[in-house]
Amino acid sequence: MLDLKLIRSDPERIKQALARRGAAGEVDALLALDARRRELLPEIEGAQAERKALSKQIGEAKQRGEDGAELMETVQGLKDRIESGKAELETVEADLERVAATLPNLPDPDAPEGMTEEDAVVLREVGERPSFDFEPRDHLEIGTELGLIDMESAARLSGSRFAYLKGDLVLLELALVRFALDLVRGEGHEPVVPPVLVREEALYGTGFLPGDRDQIYEVPKDDLYLVGTSEVALAGLHAEEILEAAQLPLRYAGFSPCFRREAGAAGRDTRGIFRVHQFDKVEMFSFVEPSESAAEHERLLAIEERILGELEIPYRVVNVAAGDLGAPAAKKYDCEAWIPSQERYRELTSCSNTTDYQARRLNCRYRPADNEATQAVHTLNGTAVAVGRTMIALIENRQDREGGFTLPNILHSYGSPERIASR
Image (cartoon, rainbow, N blue to C red; front, top):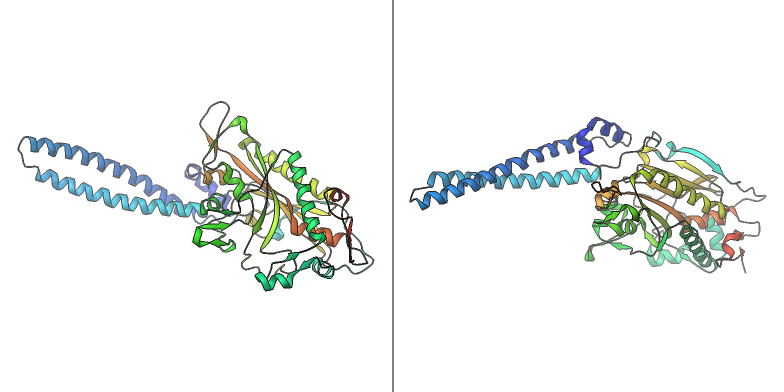
C-alpha cells in the first residue's frame, strides 16, 4: 500500500510515476476521499464536544428546576448530525481503503518504460546454447516416451494442466529442491516449510488481492485460499510486528507446493508442465532496512544466477518493464532459460523489490537503531528454483540422440541419476 501522506504531499509526482504503469487514474479519487474524511473527522468531533457541553447545561438547568426543552432540541439535532456524519465517514473510509488497495507500487526509476513482456530490457546472456545434430524434441515428448510425465492420467483425475511425475523425474525434483535449499541456506536464508492455505488478509497484505482473485484457488467453507507462491506465507511471518534494527536482515527460503488457476491462459504455454495448476518451488524472501533494499535485490539476483550457473542452464537476465510489473513490485528481474523446442528464452525465475508496499499492508515495521519513530521495513522475494520449469530446461538442453538426457554434476550428490533414459 502506498503512503497516503506521500500521495497527499506530492500528488503530481505520484500520478506521473503510476502513469508508467497505466494506473494513475485513481489518485484524484483517492485524494478526494481523503479530503472528505479529513473534513468529516473535526466536524464529528466538534459536534460531539458541543453535544457533551449542552447535555451538561441541560442537567444543570433541570437541577435549577428550569425547562431545558430548547437545549434538548438542539442536542437532538447534534445527535442526528453526529450519526449521519459517522455513517458518511464509514462509507468514505471504506471507499478510501478500497481505492488505496487497488493502487500498485511506485515503479523504480530504473524499471524500463513499456507495458508488455516485450518491453523488458535484456541485461545479459549467460551460457552456451546447445547445438544438436538431430531435431530436438520438447520436454513432454521426451518425458512421455520415457514414462516420466503422465498428463493423460492426471487429466482424468484432476482435469487439464495437472501431471503425474514418475520414476527418476521424482528423484530429480527432490535433488533440485535439496540442492537449492543447501545453497540458499549457505547464503543466510533459513529454510521454511510454510502453510499453503492462508486467510484473505495474507493475500491482501502481499498485494495479490484484490487484483489477482481470478488466479487464486479458494476454499469458501473455511475462508481460506491456496497460495500461488510461498512468498505469501513468508511475508506473513512478521505481520503486525515491530522488529528491532539489530534483527535485520531476516532471510528465509520457503519450500512448498503452489497453486494457480491460470485463468485466461488457455491455449498459451499449456503443453506439458510449463504452465500447470500445481507445482513446487523454493522461494527466497528478505526483510531489510529501506536503505539496504536495492543492494538486497542485486544479491537475490546473484543467487539466482549462481543456481542457474551450477545447473549449467543457458539463460538471460531481463529488467521487466514498469507496466508489466505485478502490483507489489517496484522493480523486477527475470532470469529466462533457453528452451530449444521453442527456440527462445522463457521465464524461469524472478526476483522483485516490493519496497515498503507489502510491509505497509501487513503492518510490519522496525525500530531504527537511533530509536527514531518506527517505519515500514522493505521486503523482497526471489525464486531459487521453480521445479517444473527447471526440469524442462534441463531435459531440453541436455537431451541426446538416443532419447534420454544427462543431468549436471552438481545434482548427482543430491540423488539425481547421471542420465535418464529408457530402460
